[in-house]
Structures are given as structure tokens and as C-alpha cells.
Image 1 (cartoon, rainbow, N blue to C red):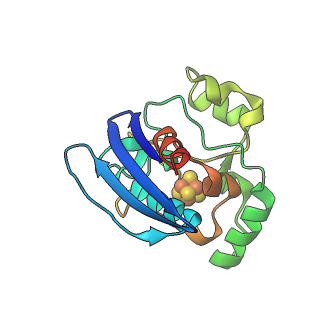
Image 2: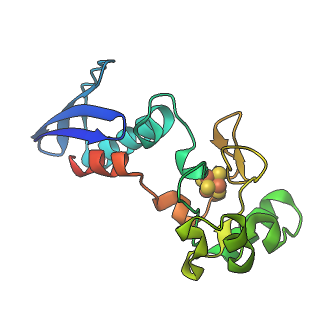
Amino acid sequence: MVGTCHGGQFAGALDCDGTGDGFLVRITLRGETGTLAMTIDREALKSTLTEYTCGQRCMGHAANHGGCCTVETRDFIIGPIADSAAFLARLSEKTGRAVPHAEVFVDHAEGRALFPDRATWQRRENYPALRVVMDTPRHACRLYDDEAGACTVYEIRPEVCRRFLCDPLRHLLSLV
Ligand code: SF4
């Protein structure tokens, strides 16, 4: 199997030779050729590619981080959080206090006014959404540590955060 990826500033090539449960993999990313050769199973390969992309080429941009935890200037909302009640329970247990819904989430009435010119923030079905920090340009999720480049609640993060794939990563995984 051979594939190439082009998405945003991301460009790369991926070659796989399937042998039983294993794959020999070569990944070449534009301008900074890194060759990775190993024999691993498909799920392990997907996991490795996800870890690499999220850690070093978030949203397909070199050295980027936290693209799916920040809104920036995009028409993007971190929601809906279908498991909001379960997540609040996990967060309350983690912090040792009852965390109020409004501390972590934004509902439609408030959210639509925060970004009146962004369509995703106007749609009721996108709520509750994770609250973002309004007084910084990145508008990061309030649970994201923008300096450290890490989610502060990673082990207990909501389902949508576990499942979300940006377009470059989705495309890369589709080649495996
Ligand atoms: S909960 Fe964590 S993973 Fe989800 S958007 Fe916020 S910082 Fe990102």
C-alpha cells in the first residue's frame, strides 16, 4: 500500500508493506525526511501516527500544538459534549470539589453571543460546548494549558476529545 498526504501545510508519503499482522512502514514528511521502519500491527501503527501528528504536526502544521483544543480565528467549536454530566462527575472527583456546569461549559444562549459572526457557535445542536478563554488570541479550552501544550484533564477528557481527528490526521490514517 502506498499513499501520499496533502492537507494544509502537511505533505508526506507513507509506504506500507503488509506481512501478516505486521507492516513495514516508511514515512516521509516534506522537507524533514524522517524514516521510520518497524513491524507493528495496524492499530499500533495508527496509534503511533496519531501520537506523532498530534505531538509534532497538529492540524498538519509543523511545531503546532493544541489545534483541536483552541478556536483561534476558525469557525470551530469544541462541542457538543454529549457526555457533559459524566465528564463533570469525573472532573469533580479529580479536583475534589463539585465543579459547576458553567465553569467548564458554555450553553447556546451565552455561546452564540460570544462569537456572533461564527456559524458553528450559532447552532443549538453544538452545545454544551467546552468553555474557551476569551481574553487570549488562541481562545483555548479553559482546560488546556497553552504554555505546556497539554490538556490538563487528558485521562478523563470528554468523548469528543478522544474521538476527534483533524483532516490531515484523518487522511493519514485512511492510508493505513
Ligand atoms: S478537554 Fe482537554 S482535550 Fe478536550 S478540548 Fe479541552 S484541553 Fe483539549
